[in-house]
Image (cartoon, rainbow, N blue to C red; front, side, top):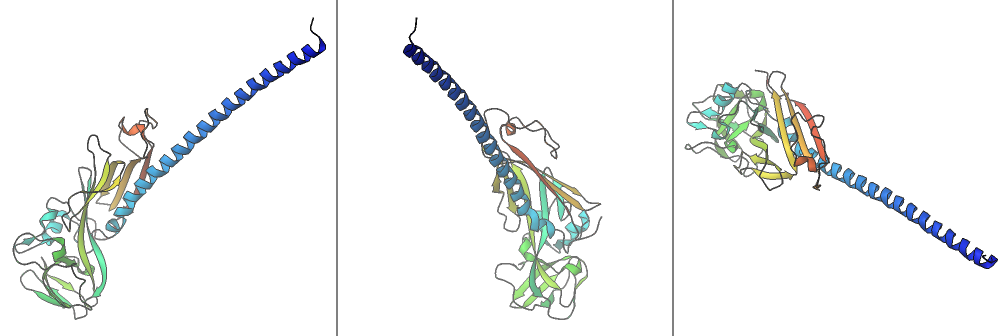
Length: 299
């Protein structure tokens, strides 16, 4: 038979064991909750990173898209013909279907870069057979325009735009504030018309086995070749409607951490294609935007 003191000691030991078990249960639950919070936080960070990558792609293309087709014919035949004056032609756009075109998942844009320079002289009528001098308000910035020397294919720097004219102009000579040009068809450069530089860009996603997918662009003006711009972009779907003149760009991008198992579904709203198993190991985001190409006219 236990004495009162021994009973008190035994009761205290039971209380201690119960307290330890209770603390263990609470600690286990707390660790589980904390682990879930950490995983949720990591997922939020990964989703933010994926969205940032998608938005970066659209930001890179925003200005070229908004200025695409400005001062250029939009029909494919007229577009190519306008960039050929005599023996001078812009070979870089061979095969393009217009200043805005899509081929094999690649976006191709020919666009205008505005300046503050205007035609200070009277309106000048241009043709393909005779140089026409245009008096500029200030000299052209060094390196932005390159006169065609009469042999080989031209580059975009050898062409300029005065958008109201509707055709590009081949630069035959540039001296201080005097710009000598020709056009493929008879046209006119109006007084006070603003000078624009002609530039081009190609954009697509490059997938190399064993490497992180990347969104790449090529500066057609410099002939730079495809250059990595944004890593972690698994898909890029450009779509152009030439009748309604709307361009839609959809980007599938992923977060920076690769998980051992799938963490994303096999399909996502806004992305029309099945998602590869490898991409599903990342947190994914779909970013999309549609522009109306207001420059030019519908074919």
